[in-house]
Length: 338
Ligand code: PBG
Image 1 (tube, rainbow, N blue to C red):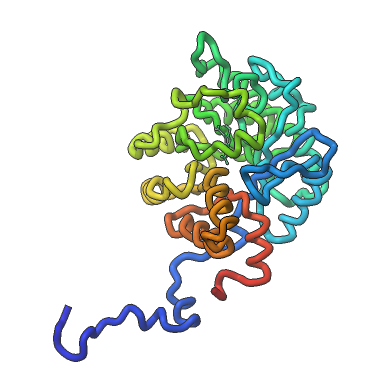
Image 2 (tube, rainbow, N blue to C red; image 1 turned 180 degrees about the vertical axis):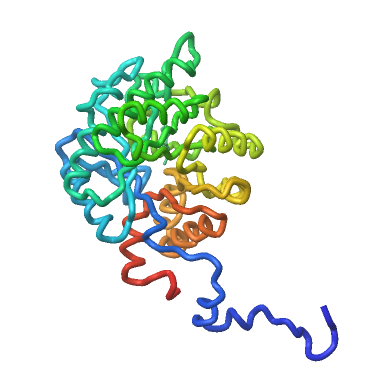
């Protein structure tokens, strides 16, 4: 850096001075096309019931889900991810309801795809909404068993694809499930159905409000998922998970949670160059909402800033509970103009 001439010669603030030049040098962009909307569907007759720990998020009846899905599509959101709130009476030790072709998820998917065929529909593959213990797999002698669980997940993937689901998203973290699910889909004639792997899914405390929303928290009790979800301290291991899942045929990989794991997103994007999605999970949403409700944060600004940070980290798409709201806002007031 030269000390000749007027100090300082290089002034990075010049480009920041006006909105037009800030726009010209902006490195990351955000639009509705980046967003995936996770939605909760319930059996209850109410069109929607609020989720206390996620202000602004509701559980929807199938009919209401159809109408809000259409709204999301109209706002430019490419896809939704459907999460069922299963009637406690239908939960069992082995979660058999997961493979019932008439279960809530399958009925919801059929209804949404019928009303709005161009909206992408993503479904989780994991047993936790359906089990009395709230674990993602089958429990034998107090341990979530891998291979036996994968055999059930294969069937769950196929019933969901039969119902019209476009993207199967295994979120269970069993070993080897991506390849097995891919093969099961192919055998069932679903070669065109994509697989989105929750590849780097951490054993996180940020999932609390979600477990509330789907009613699995009580089931899980003091249990946790640390014997299969990743240790938050690990990054190299995330690379191994992603490498395996891509080799086994994943079309896209996901990092979850999002904001505390931006380094993981960046490294995956740099090393693999594969479609990389980020999940801004329930706890991240809840903490920003709660602070905003207290008047401590400006919600409209922090939510967009947080979503742009995913783009900067290299994410291709972001699952966020704020997708509909943000997409509708961006339609009126594009990020490009900010
Ligand atoms: C289920 C699943 C979870 C989430 C998505 N799929 C919870 C968990 O693993 O316990 C969490 C999403 C969120 O917190 O928003 N396997």
